[in-house]
Image 1 (cartoon, rainbow, N blue to C red):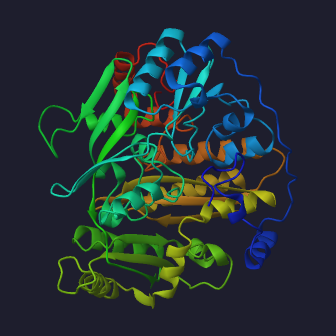
Image 2 (image 1 turned 90 degrees about the vertical axis):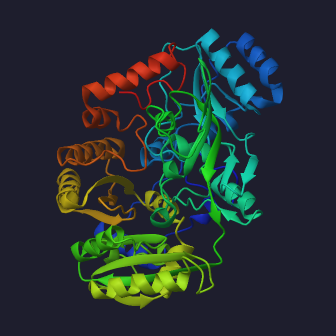
Image 3 (image 1 turned 180 degrees about the horizontal axis):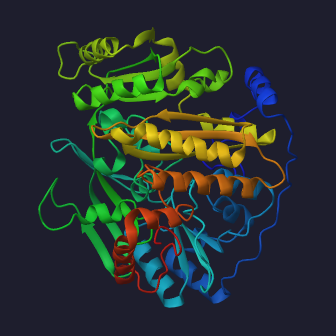
Length: 527
């Protein structure tokens, strides 16, 4: 696996390959195949930063940490949504930063922010580049330049407190790097979003990320107990205790702020003992509604496994849980993946064998049929590969993208139907819409949609219209505009509707107080 993602594809392009025969046959029948030619390397517009500003940056950070070459700027252009990739594939790199800067300490970040305020230069924090909502495409009009603040040098495990079971991580650590460092101490964070291989600790915090094992380990914002943040007004050190009643929790103000209030330079997280055993298994339910009710029962009766996800009938029929055999033989009904991680000793509290037996008994009573470990293991082995399938689909002219929301249990069916209907109405009947539930709470769940349709002559316009229709359907049905993908720029209109004018006013006031000149990720997250 490469350390840098390809500028117009996900991750390491050697991991994508051609579509499996079963998948290609399905695509050709349902949507048609249209090979899309690759665009050669495109030159970027020259940096708009004046030489004097570049010289000052070199003095602040060292010349080797101020990069203006095309390759580095290209790698820091936008994120990895399908529109981002389509623009890059078409040779549109107009959002490229004027330079990439790499601070190596909290003090460097403070100095960089002071520089930006003095010269009115926009700063866009960059972790792994996995954003899918336009959060790296900041507004640049009216600024002397735009800098991508690559936090790659801030990647230390600063502290481990085994008595409190916390660790302090720097924001530039990628998911696998953080887990490897913690594993040396016999610990695990347990945060595994689909972007895990490339996404960073700082990005997890700045976007309120949620991982595939959230049923057992919790969302990332629930793991965070402390933060250090550099802002134009000074440093915020947050998290003097695990919980308090000392006014509103400012940690929650920073979490999800997408670099608009400050740049995160350290995150203190809750950790757990490294699990000795991991088991993933599959279950079958007769319908999406029955499977969802079973999930609700587990959540409301303290029977949660580590991983819990449910595919609807369409996603199950296409075998999407097995990325290597999409379109291959699949079960009927709805596929549920259940994962257990914990102690191997059956006598230990929270043992895998004990928890597994309790969950299996409940699922059987609720109408589930065990399918064994084979499909569960297949899902676990391919859990980070779905974005590569999207690349392969884009290569043959298929417009493939995802979107997600969350709602209360009572509204799940209404939201599910409304979003599917909006997508099908906008894109036409020759569209595949799939859904799964992958994050479950006592009071509700997430809904994660995968969409595939023909690109036609204007794929960007086609998806923009579909995304707008689905987003409005979410809001009209009382759901959130995003459960874990964040706001960015793509979700701004519906985010404003969700929080209302008073909520918008609060966010703008905080922004004005912390960043009065507006240099931190301008145009992102704040309606």
